[in-house]
Amino acid sequence: MRTAIATDSNSGITQEQAAKLGIYVLPMPFMINGEMFYEGVNLTHEEFFKRMEEGADITTSQPSPGEVTDFWDKLLKEYDEILYIPMSSGLSGSCQTAIMLADDYDGKVQVVNNQRISVTQEQSALDARDLAAKGYEAAQIKEILERTKYESSIYITLTTLKYLKKGGRITPAAAALGTLLRIKPVLTIQGEKLDAFSKARTAKQAKTIMLTALAKDLEERFHDKNAEHTYLEIAHTCNEEGAKELEEALKEQYPGAPITIAPLSLSIACHIGPGSFAVACSSKLKELE
Image 1: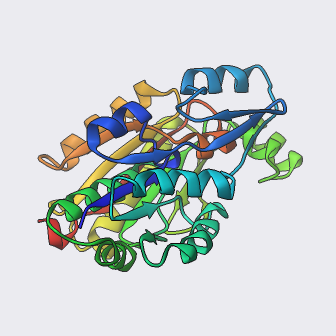
Image 2: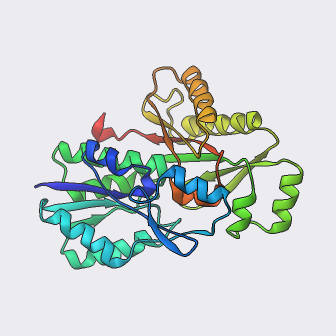
């Protein structure tokens, strides 16, 4: 049984990386000043943030049903089945749409709803690829990924409230007060939605809050205090310096633990803006250890 592993660009996996990894990536659409762009196809991260800083009107979208089924149909010419991992159903309707569309494929397309996004979604795609290489079929991989869907955490620090205000996530008054007080909110994704977690006055304080929260999750939720069975992940929006500082702190705290750094997917970056950084973790699958 030949199983194609597919995801969308919310995973942060570029088309070039996908080709090297043996994973297929459906690009996410964005409307910029009324014009449609596709992440990683005709929209780079650099161009996205350039347009954002110029004040362009940017909105996220989801692929049309036809784009999704065309993507699957092309893969099924080469593979017997597809394991498709879209972004969290709590953050977009694209997952539910994919589940509905898969009903017409007689089990040949298995859609995973494992509540992941960005670097944790990328890890799910890599895990799925490795499970397929070990002989697991799509339905079995889906069961494993959904059973372990809450075994990940993400904490994100923002440098500005401007884009949360623009997207209607907070009121203009709250944004103005936060900017005046130079508050740097720390947000979290625990399975589904992007939620408020804490507040900081400096980037240093925000980093401490995130690392403390991560350590608590590792010990209390994942029962892996030293991150011996956990992937550690860092994501950022045009903030490589902040990402590198986080990496050094993680290396010191968890020597020997695997750490990856990647740009934060544009679907999140659209709402939080440039300069942000995030720390995340995903449990290693027992089937792959």
